Image 1 (cartoon, protein in one colour):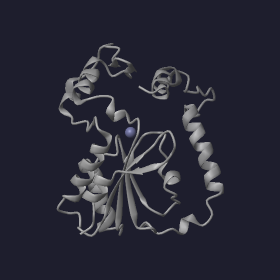
Image 2 (image 1 turned 120 degrees about the vertical axis):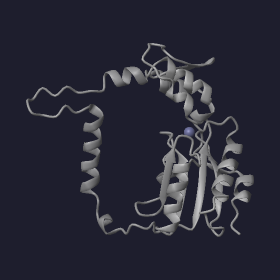
Image 3 (image 1 turned 90 degrees about the vertical axis):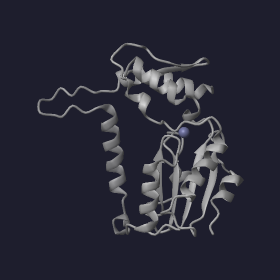
Length: 223
Ligand SMILES: [Zn+2]
């Protein structure tokens, strides 16, 4: 388990605890530090918005990326996107879930994308647990769990639910294989036209490099 993953998880509870600013002024909405930071950043963004209000809805560069929600990944930067360029669909793992496929179909059918990328990444959290583990953690409590060299542990503080045992969390143990599987799942969907190529890649969190998974790209080849 790489260190930055452990550290990131370990600091989470403390970070949460100190992250709410209590505004004393009457009538003022209680705003967390995070909301204040986001709104401040947004004001800067608006000030520099330029002519982006003129952008059209269909992505100008006619492609879509399905990738993981991992905070270390910035698809706009790793793939060179500006506003209006492309669709980016994100979920835990960058998996070809039913909902990701729903978005991809809208992406081409209504908004004209012609090429798709499936991009997973090294050190993905989805490799650290299984459906069974997640089900047990949620059954233990709804608190944030912790991880160490022996795997995930729950505080077992109570108040958990067995509902998590009925969900397919779409975890994986072989990253490259998961890219191949996702490309094949999209390729074989009856609503996906054969002339849209689907490329498979893994983003290297240590270097920022996109590394092709040739078997995935071959499986996603346009016909
Ligand atoms: Zn991930």
